[in-house]
Length: 437
Image 1: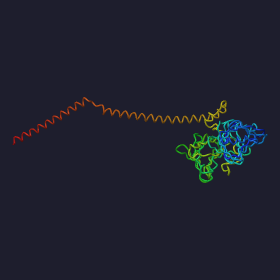
Image 2: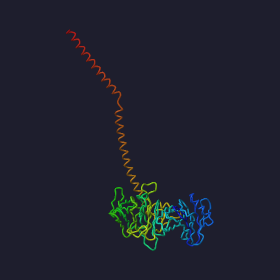
Image 3: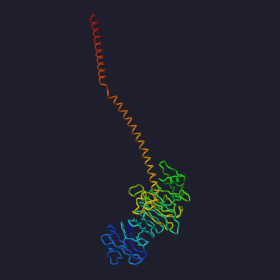
């Protein structure tokens, strides 16, 4: 498998294997990082680092189950913007372990390989995870901590044997600076029934917006007493500071489908934290993108024992599995299946997704049909009005020239006759005056 690693202030990197020696390939386009690695490879005391070509290196552990490390020159702290680590073997086959030593956040982007990656965080409690791949690829956490979802989708479940971590806490970690303050939006799904969802903010009253296209979930939210808004969304709020509002879906729980949460506050003092209680894999997708959406923020994800746990972001042994895609909850997961992956069981799992998609499609079609009928009626009315206007205009414009000409001549003759009669009358008056003189 292969991953891309980035981190600031890295003091050294290391490689070991749980049972034998290891050999991996490191590659980078970062000129400054390549200079550091070139210097380490040129040293006669270099611990297993050999330069293959420009920016490409072989890194070996020199003894069974023993770590080989590269400490940068003069104990410098190096910023790694992009380091590709390839040829990592799975822990199930011996297990190559690549270590990054830093007190800063480490971003791990999976690039290829079907196995899960194991991440053990020793001392630093911030891990920034990006996953690039299909649903068979994943990252597994072996220590109690939380992941910070920056973009895309991750899925988590408890695979521990020492604790029961049936509650996923989302957005539990506060912003460390004012620049990290955000109003988060995310979509969640579970491949098992959800027994309850809870909302809590330890420092303020919490209020978020829930939306869903699943009719069963929408009815369950109504039954739980949530206020339904005019646009079909639901307002979910607590009644006070550090109050918990739990929506209980019963012992058997319900299939929540894809349920979206928006207006989820992330501050430097306290957050709106959402808890999902389920025994299955919970998939979370960050609905905002950095640099594109306003009030974008990173979303923390962790496993805990209950929504009232005092330190819910670090409870128990942490994550079990993290993978990309929305499992069997949307058509993207179906489209992401590789050749030969579509079994009868997988097809059955996707049947409800297809049914929901068809129902949603039919609803959209009916809305379009009703709108189209309204537009057709409006167009017909406007055409009728246009015809009437043209008819009126025609009456005005299409006059009978012969009749109007005859009428004009008639009126002209009458006018001339009147003028002549008046002139004759005036002439009689003049004659009378002459006789009197």
